[in-house]
Image 1 (cartoon, chains in turn green, cyan):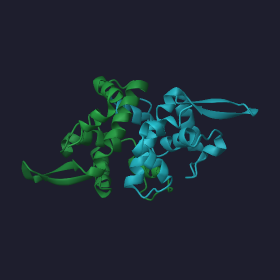
Image 2 (cartoon, one colour; image 1 turned 120 degrees about the vertical axis):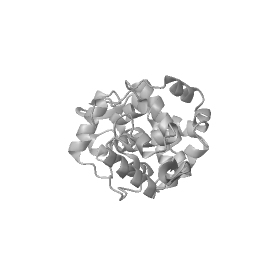
Image 3 (cartoon, helix red, strand yellow; image 1 turned 45 degrees about the horizontal axis):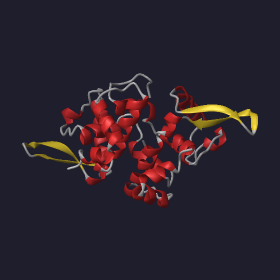
Length: 128
Length: 128
């Protein structure tokens, strides 16, 4: 995961940032599950905490999430999506639909049905 | 890139297969650029041939592409997308749009404009 772009291709450039085993799983938890704290973001899949830290730092640097003081406890910090990050919601929902149709992943089938039936409404439900 | 699923999440399961630096770049070339031969698929980004072989084998195993005899030269084989693979076209186009908006990747801006304006038509243009 170099930060140097491989080419002028926007797909390759997006994958320079997002193309690994964990980044979009972390963003799933931020964008779809609305998890906010570091401990919540230690995904059910068991991401190592050093990898989680690294990916969050990269996502902050790329302007996809921000770290802000927790309004409930100013000593703690939470992760919030930016507008740029929220534009990844459609990609995550499309991956959810594709994964439901073509892999053994079976969680939240109603969400996949909703994306297939009315993608725009499903996307809007995850936006502020 | 284990082939064991991490969880029941369809997003994580899709990324168990697609979540790396190269797989979706190879699929970009198969699905959007309609490249067919191994030599064509040695992407402009310079994928190592052993990585390309590995990714193509994984994609064949997952039923996303098939290898068929080249109709122009039966001694050679070409790579063709399956129906399951063609269902990744929307995800690639969404990544293209996101990358155009939010990374330094600038190739094919007209395609991003088309996806933003009429996503369904843009998707259909890449289907058989």
